[in-house]
Length: 134
Image 1: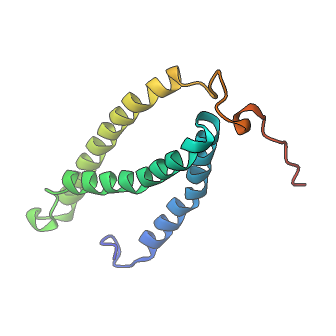
Image 2: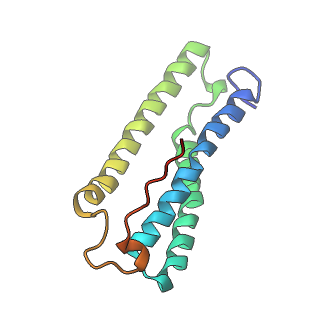
């Protein structure tokens, strides 16, 4: 139940929006495994990367719980002070996440190529076919 307006609808809509991106994440896992790993390694890589998505969600839930642990509505005399405390915590958490993601992603952008120099599998040697849907 959403505490903002005592309804479940915002949480339902938010979960639906997040779920729409899942297909893109699962496609990225398959593309990465096909381009960078041999036939023997591919299943293990897909399994490991598939487990990383729920593990990342767990880290996000724990991080959010820890960040907002001191924003109990009973501790604030009025709603304005509560809202300002929540926004301070939210901005701090977003800034921390931006730092972590930048530190993790910039080395990947700089050092990782689109495909290895020596293709490990037949799939890695072929360019994707152009699909005409219209």
